[in-house]
Length: 287
Image (cartoon, rainbow, N blue to C red; front, side):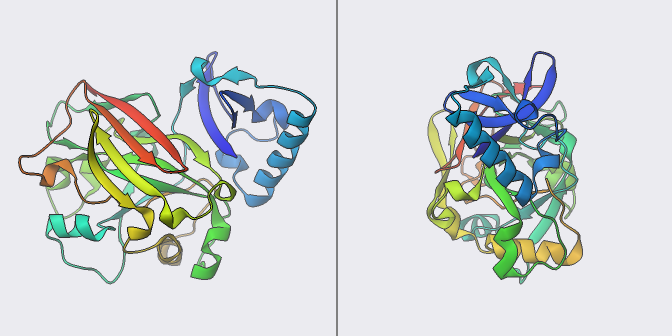
């Protein structure tokens, strides 16, 4: 399934994407879930899928057209957004950072996010705004001390993420947090794809395209720390909950490390494209 959080008719809802339309899960499941986050345990996703198949078999169609809705971040209200830094070797090399024994983890706040086809905001206090195309992993079943070989049992699905960095603020100290939490800088979407839709996640390509020019390109299998390792590591220091988001790192080719630098400015279009997952499109606006 492809699940989406969207805004239509003055309210936020969530649904399943079918073709060019959306079936509203609130209607489908008799308002059992208040939002996508509350529906993201494994058993609930299975029940939604069974009900959806029966709905379609009975000849019912979509409730809304994709063309008529506004996209929200896939999970607008996660309890935690945990981001992995320096998780592709070519990116680690271009930054000059040392190798680490464990994943580099930092946090992003939920209110810093923005949706597909929405603005990424270049803040007044900086003109050093950089793209970072990444895969987002959305937790379905929570837990602590999750073994690597059980990690994917805790994953509801995946999505595209642009973990935009305000580089000068990111580099004020050795801590990344200020440069990663400006409003409307964490682009997330357009939807969550459940893992049964993807045969081999590691073989999927990830690309970042700025104004039509390819800036980043890698395979998801190129990560230094793979998804099971990341989930295992994080779940040893914090409890993961349904709807938590893990943003898994960006490949080499970021604008700040190019010569000359290629930074985003108002009017730029930035696309994060992940094979079998989706295309996340945003335009940059000045604050």
